[in-house]
Image (spheres, helix red, strand yellow):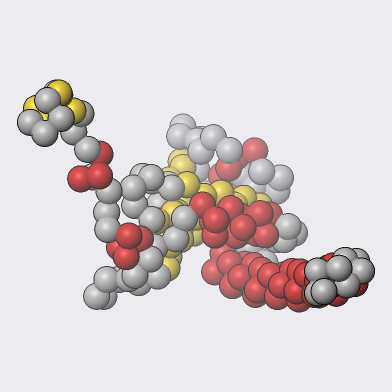
Length: 175
């Protein structure tokens, strides 16, 4: 659909800016809105084997029949889904990559449900020796340590480059 523009004397396309949320809505939490929420994985499988979860049944040491005595229909063990509000791919990918470095994490993946909303969903499955929440907290602590180290190393290199740069002009710029 084209909208007439009397000033330009031509037809213009409608602006897409009407769909874009205000910038502050991308990082400020609303009243009562939590930064992170956790839900236990609700996907089910049948212990009898009629219904299977695609990737989960192929993990080493895991089988639906091992839990058949508890209930005929169970969620995937040691799996949680975390929803991060007002965050995007930057944090999602860093957490996913750091979680996968842990020997206790069997699966970690994230998705952004819609590009206009700053939110991502992170699914974590552990081997049962630690909870997904504990794995996430440890990954966050490790990331803070890694980013602190990166900051110190970058600052040190930046200062060294500035010192080397000041001595290479031979005093020609100061005269």
